[in-house]
Length: 116
Image (tube, rainbow, N blue to C red; front, side, top):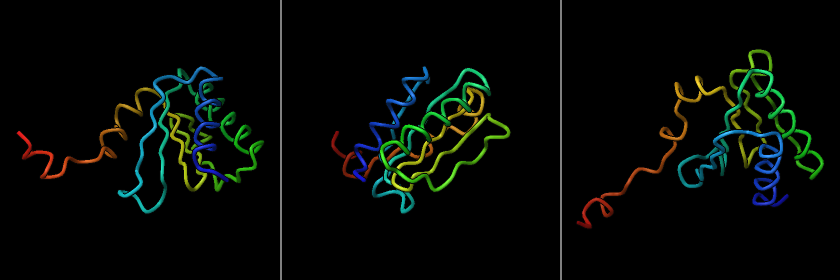
Protein backbone atom coordinates (compact mmCIF):
# COMPACT_ATOMS: atom_id res chain seq x y z
CA UNK A 1 0.00 0.00 0.00
CA UNK A 2 1.42 3.36 -1.05
CA UNK A 3 1.30 5.86 1.83
CA UNK A 4 0.60 8.84 -0.44
CA UNK A 5 -2.33 7.02 -2.04
CA UNK A 6 -3.72 6.14 1.39
CA UNK A 7 -3.33 9.74 2.57
CA UNK A 8 -5.14 11.02 -0.54
CA UNK A 9 -7.97 8.52 -0.04
CA UNK A 10 -8.35 9.62 3.58
CA UNK A 11 -8.42 13.30 2.64
CA UNK A 12 -11.02 12.65 -0.07
CA UNK A 13 -13.16 10.64 2.38
CA UNK A 14 -13.11 13.53 4.86
CA UNK A 15 -13.90 16.12 2.19
CA UNK A 16 -16.71 13.93 0.82
CA UNK A 17 -18.48 14.07 4.20
CA UNK A 18 -17.82 17.80 4.67
CA UNK A 19 -15.03 17.57 7.23
CA UNK A 20 -13.83 20.98 8.36
CA UNK A 21 -10.35 22.46 8.72
CA UNK A 22 -8.55 19.37 7.40
CA UNK A 23 -4.81 19.49 8.13
CA UNK A 24 -2.10 16.99 7.24
CA UNK A 25 0.96 16.94 9.51
CA UNK A 26 4.14 15.29 8.24
CA UNK A 27 5.72 13.70 11.32
CA UNK A 28 8.36 11.65 9.54
CA UNK A 29 11.57 12.20 11.45
CA UNK A 30 9.84 13.32 14.65
CA UNK A 31 7.61 10.31 15.32
CA UNK A 32 8.56 6.67 15.25
CA UNK A 33 4.90 5.67 15.28
CA UNK A 34 3.51 7.11 12.03
CA UNK A 35 4.45 9.16 8.96
CA UNK A 36 1.41 11.42 8.76
CA UNK A 37 -1.32 12.67 11.03
CA UNK A 38 -4.51 14.00 9.53
CA UNK A 39 -6.59 16.23 11.79
CA UNK A 40 -10.16 17.19 10.95
CA UNK A 41 -13.12 18.79 12.72
CA UNK A 42 -16.73 17.69 12.70
CA UNK A 43 -19.73 19.82 13.56
CA UNK A 44 -21.35 17.37 16.01
CA UNK A 45 -20.68 14.01 17.66
CA UNK A 46 -22.71 12.33 14.92
CA UNK A 47 -20.71 14.13 12.22
CA UNK A 48 -17.39 13.13 13.86
CA UNK A 49 -18.48 9.48 13.88
CA UNK A 50 -19.70 9.68 10.27
CA UNK A 51 -16.38 11.18 9.13
CA UNK A 52 -14.36 8.48 10.91
CA UNK A 53 -16.59 5.71 9.58
CA UNK A 54 -16.25 7.02 6.02
CA UNK A 55 -12.45 7.12 6.33
CA UNK A 56 -12.52 3.49 7.52
CA UNK A 57 -14.78 2.35 4.65
CA UNK A 58 -12.96 4.20 1.86
CA UNK A 59 -9.50 3.10 3.02
CA UNK A 60 -10.65 -0.52 3.24
CA UNK A 61 -11.91 -0.27 -0.36
CA UNK A 62 -8.35 0.68 -1.28
CA UNK A 63 -7.07 -2.42 0.50
CA UNK A 64 -5.74 -0.67 3.60
CA UNK A 65 -6.12 -2.60 6.82
CA UNK A 66 -6.99 -0.31 9.73
CA UNK A 67 -5.12 -1.19 12.92
CA UNK A 68 -7.92 0.20 15.03
CA UNK A 69 -10.41 2.90 15.86
CA UNK A 70 -10.73 4.57 19.26
CA UNK A 71 -13.30 6.93 20.71
CA UNK A 72 -16.45 5.94 18.82
CA UNK A 73 -18.55 5.95 22.00
CA UNK A 74 -17.80 9.49 23.09
CA UNK A 75 -17.40 10.84 19.55
CA UNK A 76 -15.77 14.11 20.59
CA UNK A 77 -12.48 12.66 19.30
CA UNK A 78 -12.25 9.57 17.13
CA UNK A 79 -8.84 8.23 16.13
CA UNK A 80 -8.46 5.90 13.13
CA UNK A 81 -5.03 4.24 12.96
CA UNK A 82 -3.68 2.93 9.66
CA UNK A 83 -0.08 2.67 10.86
CA UNK A 84 1.55 5.04 8.36
CA UNK A 85 -1.34 7.50 8.65
CA UNK A 86 -3.24 8.28 11.85
CA UNK A 87 -6.50 10.21 11.51
CA UNK A 88 -7.88 12.40 14.30
CA UNK A 89 -11.50 13.53 13.84
CA UNK A 90 -12.53 15.91 16.59
CA UNK A 91 -15.16 18.33 17.75
CA UNK A 92 -13.80 21.90 17.58
CA UNK A 93 -13.67 22.16 21.39
CA UNK A 94 -11.53 19.02 21.72
CA UNK A 95 -9.32 20.09 18.82
CA UNK A 96 -8.71 23.48 20.41
CA UNK A 97 -8.00 21.91 23.82
CA UNK A 98 -5.49 19.29 22.59
CA UNK A 99 -4.02 21.52 19.83
CA UNK A 100 -2.32 18.65 17.99
CA UNK A 101 -1.16 20.94 15.20
CA UNK A 102 0.96 22.95 17.63
CA UNK A 103 2.09 19.87 19.52
CA UNK A 104 3.44 18.17 16.38
CA UNK A 105 4.84 21.16 14.52
CA UNK A 106 8.49 20.86 13.60
CA UNK A 107 10.57 23.15 15.81
CA UNK A 108 12.91 25.56 14.07
CA UNK A 109 16.53 24.46 14.15
CA UNK A 110 19.24 26.75 15.51
CA UNK A 111 20.45 27.30 11.93
CA UNK A 112 17.02 28.67 10.95
CA UNK A 113 17.02 31.05 13.91
CA UNK A 114 20.50 32.40 13.11
CA UNK A 115 19.77 33.35 9.48
CA UNK A 116 18.82 36.96 10.36
